[in-house]
Image 1: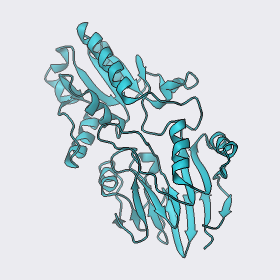
Image 2 (image 1 turned 90 degrees about the vertical axis):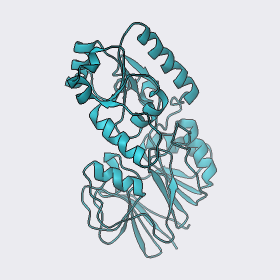
Image 3 (image 1 turned 90 degrees about the horizontal axis):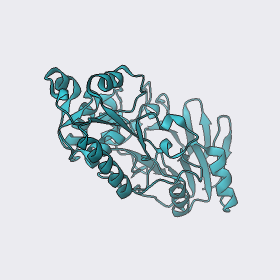
Length: 327
């Protein structure tokens, strides 16, 4: 059969073999299978009127974040959910020889294992870091760098706030650096960590920042706290710096490039990402064996052009562009 694949105002629409499939739609469509790859807010539907296919973890995390997935299922015949290695519960979708990666990472990172790459004829891939300048350091190097930094600051009695996305990076940071103590969490991260622990993820326990401050614990320095990535102008960070002299360490893939200042908003910036870097994206494309590649999310033009130079049939998937081909 010849599928139609198009980028619509509601997300990626695939129509093949009588199936209508939306990939990470803004609104769940009652006439389609609606696949939600993971529970980051930019991938969650704002309205639910159709069957939503996702992992159980994604459904429960979405619920914690205020998004109720009505008509949720974790299995539909002929649709395979593939671990994408991005965050807890993140999945890619394989159906009709089409593989949609969602957000993907092919590196082991603590409790998060490298993505599985299935063979397919058509690959729809994110390319958030689809430029050759984005080559990320190995996890062992990051651990060494950060542990040495914390040790140095502890020796001076300085408390440290480790900043990462509330869902995903914050849990990785907790697992990698939670052996330092006393250990505190921004309340929102403590709540998210608790849900991860319910799914069997091994994370050290700590006290939420509201309770710690109420009981005067933050005055007993040094300490480590894990908090969401935020601007230095945020009142929470301003208070932590003014009251306790805290130093911030931010974790972001964007910290790698001098061209993207928003990746270096902390006192110290560490290059660490929940996505593939450039080389890993290229290797993932090779492993898939795909005859046709569509790029979405990120440097779509640049990455597609690089793939074409390597001999791949690749192009960005854009709104109003309808793609039909044999699979």
